[in-house]
Image 1 (cartoon, rainbow, N blue to C red):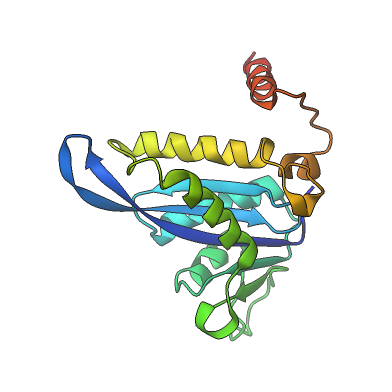
Image 2 (image 1 turned 180 degrees about the vertical axis):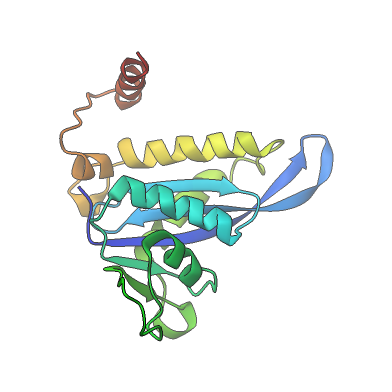
Length: 196
């Protein structure tokens, strides 16, 4: 179950090139987030936020949520209209000759004009709160990717939200999924049973 609005945003990270080498490398964490259930639909740690990388993230989000989403809210990054055109067949409002109109509305929120995308920015603050004590993701990008996937799983399946009535986003988004007290153990057991 998913709400009608999905937000997408990116966070800038600086990762040390390696444990023994000085210097930092700019990386990005791009994620999509369901506003109603507070569920992080997709999250991807990447070296650059090119349109191709953003399209991969949005296609994965579209695959997960299906046709439920009606509004996609993003910041003012200039690449998002093209990304949404490639992903959701979103047409420009100035393109009148289009035969196929997308049902998706692109809501652009520019911080200087209308404020922030508060729900996804709160999610980013939660992620920053945890990652700022990790001393800069030493080494390869794969380890940073694995750490962020672990944070995504923890956020969706273990962390309770006051706005959801002290439920986890997974309990609201996937009510048929029943996890016990030790959610990590249950998730591992479920993933092993799916492999067989």
